[in-house]
Length: 169
Length: 57
Image 1 (cartoon, each protein chain N blue to C red):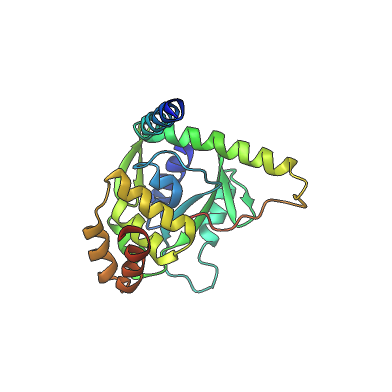
Image 2: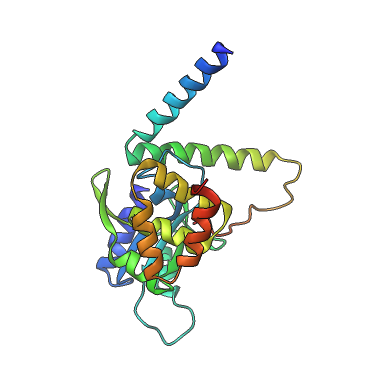
C-alpha cells in the first residue's frame, strides 16, 4: 500500500492526474477493524481528453514504471488497483475534501469517513451497507452527518430507507 | 453457558483490539486475508478460471 501511495503522489507530481483519493475498503480500515478485500480503489481526477479512454495516461505511466495491467486493475505491489474517475458531484467533492493520511511516512490522500459512508449509500450493495454500519459503530461518523451529506447529494430517500432497515428498531 | 459467554467476551475483546491497530497494520492484516482468500478460491472445485475482478469499493 505504501508503494501505491508513492506511485499516486508521483503521478500527481508528473501531471498524469490532477488529484486522487483512496476510497472503498482500504480507506474504511482507517476507522474500523480490518475487512477482507481483493482490490484497492482510487478516485482520480484526470485532465479532460479528446478520446473516450480517460485512464490511458494512467495506464501508460504505470506501465513505464513497471506496473502491469491485471484485468480491470493495475497491480501495484500486493494490490490490484482500480482507478475510478470521479464520476459525480459526490465523488468529486469526496476527493477534494480528502484527508492527507500518513502511511509509513508517505502522505496518502484518503476519502474521509462521512464521504465513504455516503458513497457506500449511493452504491447500495450489502457490503456497502455493512461499511456504513462499521463506520457508524467506530464513531468515525454520526447519523446526523451522513444524513446531512446524503440530503445534499440527493440521497435522502436512500438514507431514510437505510435508517428504517438497519437503525430504527 | 458461562463458558460460551466467556468465549464471546474474549472474542469481542480480540475484535476490539484489532480496531485499535494502526492503519498500516490493518492493511497488512487485510493483505494476509486476501492471500488466504485467493488460495482458497484457487483450490476450490468451483473455480473454473481467473478470479473475476469486479469493483470492490
